[in-house]
Image (tube, rainbow, N blue to C red):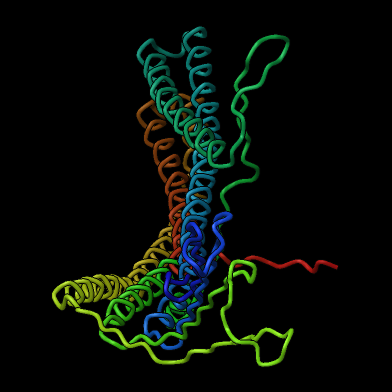
Length: 389
C-alpha cells in the first residue's frame, strides 16, 4: 500500500487566450500545453508503508484462520455433546426397560396374591422418575443436534407431500475413549508456531510499528525528481528575425536545468502525538501477545490435569461397573423370590446408573480436553494438501 507521494505524479495544464498584438494572428484562439512529472527518490515513509500493506494481507489471513479455528472447535464440541446425550439416552432407556420389567413383576405377584400395593406403587414411581430424566436428556440431545445442523449450514426443514417437516442430522457413532500422552513442552513449542491468534497479534504489533515509522518520516528530507515541458504549436507564432540564409527560418531549442529547494514547517506536536499513539497501540498489542503466550503453558497444564483426572475416574468406575451390574441382577432374582424389597432394587439400579453415567461423564470430559488441546495448540489448521495431479 503506497502513499500518494510514493507514486509518480503527472500533471497536465491547458491554458488558452486570444491572439493579440503584432506577434500573434488575431484569427482565433491558441492553446499551450504544459506537463509536469514528479517521482520521489528519497522518502523515508515509503518502506514502512510498503511493509504495512503486505502485513495487511497477513492480518486478513490470520483473522480468517482464527475464525475457522473457533467454528471448527464449536462444531466439534457440539458433535461430542450430541454423542454424549445420545449415549445417555440409550443408557436410560436400557435402565427403563429393567424398571418396566420390575413393574410387570410386581403386578404379577400382586395378581398371584404374593405382593402388595405399596411395592407396585414404588416400582411405578421409580419408572416415572426415570421417564422425567429421560425426557430432559432427549431435549438436551435435540438442542445439540439442532445447533450442529446450524453450524454445518443444513436446511432444518423440508417439504414432503405439501407439508413442511423438521429434518435434523443424525450424528453417527458413539462416544469413544482415545488415550493421550501429553508432552507439555513440545505442545507449547508447537502452539507458539501455529496458533492463529498469536500470529495475528504479532502482525498487529508489526503494523503499529510501521505506522509509527511512517509518521516519523515527516522529520526526514524528501527528495523528488521533477521534469516539465512546454509545447506551443508552430502555427501560432510569427517570428520577426532576420534570415541568415534566404528562404530559411531559424529554429531554436531551449533546455533549462536546475534544482528547486523547498521546506516544510512541521507541527512537532502533531507528529509526536501521532507517533506516540502508534507506539501506545503497539505496546498494547505486545502486552496482549505476551499475556497469551504466558497463558499457553497454564492452558496445557490444565488440559493435562483434566486428562489425567478423566483417565483415573474412568479406570476406577470400570472396575465398579461389573460389580454394580452383578448386584442388580442378584437383587432382581431375589425380588422375584420375594426375598428383596423395592428399596433394595432402587439402591441397586441407582448404583448401576450412577456408575455407568460416571463412565460416560469421564469419557466426555476426556474428549472435550482433547478438543481443547487441539484449539490451544492450533491443530485445527492442519489441512492436508492434495496433489493437483
